[in-house]
Length: 458
Image (cartoon, rainbow, N blue to C red):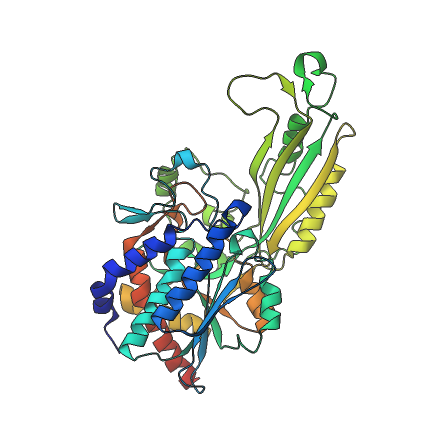
């Protein structure tokens, strides 16, 4: 087996420069003004796959942004790994909170600062470069297929149809994804579960136009006030969500499962210090790690209405809006939760306002068994490059496609991410450690080697 650490060291400057070229493309899928940039990014991903040695590379159209496909089939008798990633990124707003321009990557303190550096361009590109090294070494132990999409950050609404229409082309033995994090650089971990998601936007309408707050204030409902009161009522004093039926399908963890979660290293004081907060907060009766991984949540992601410009304007607004996300745990169905939210939110609205709930996107939760061949291959690979066994850990985020892979393609997914929770994905100053980027490229080839060996014995 090749010494991939030496190979990565030889090519690291080129790998970083090539990643920088991708990070300079503002492939923001949520904002139509970046449409041409998103398409340019898809073409750049396709070019990188071809350069690395992939065959049958295609930019596949969808009703939204295209999916980039490529493959290398070395031997039909070998197992096939389907590598999934995404090339779209979150909006960079608020721009003024970035310490450097979001689409002009820079390295500071050993970290690559740019939108998409960790989520998911940096982690996706690790697989392309690892594949390139395996090809150059003549040591490709598995068949590899790549499927890199451009709509993950807006819900992957066209991916299920693509999977269903391309079952034969996407036939594989497992899916490999790097879009998650580790506990720390000296505590490698593998994500064994993800929460699902229900995302909605709500609109509250009061009077038929903005009003003078001096003339009408006190006599007409203020939609911003009403919206805040409605949102506040969605949790009780114990931070438990008050939507009727919300917890009906939640399976409570047993004592053994909770002990396993508690065994993972976590320093709550360091957690608070890093976030500059005076205390943690969440559902009564659960630890911070449990609250952020195995319990459902409801959070306001944005709220606006009325006058928000410079100076003062004494206006009583006609409308108020909020975007709300609910993270879901195994057995919770996103469509059911969305409907429960809609019914409840409309029921608690006072007669003085009208309410509209608009569902955006969602995804099912997913769990990966730790006794699977896929998990074992990932664990052996990380132990080989980090020098210690990785810790199994449940993640708090959502990758809806993981459930789709199992439902549509019948494939289990291994979530071997190399980011850190402190990488500020979705936030200003997103970054990704140079160490993490290079360590991922070094580790991925060993996953393929161990997976091929384990599959042969199974």
